[in-house]
Length: 87
Image (tube, rainbow, N blue to C red; front, side, top):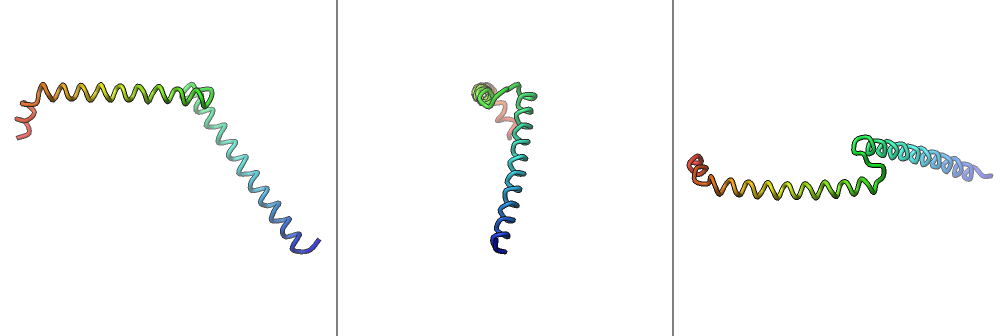
């Protein structure tokens, strides 16, 4: 084998080792995230997490709408007094 061929093989071997290490790190991070998802949010899968997130987003929108309605009602009721305070 030529010197260049050996160099290429060594470089390839190093690259494979780097990629394996990156894969192992990614797999470890994935396992950590799955465990955290299960422990903190009670979700056993990505699908259940997506469903839970969808329900929470729906609730958030509902509560924001209710808050906006309550603020509008409050401002309508107390507008004159609020304007006096602003002067």
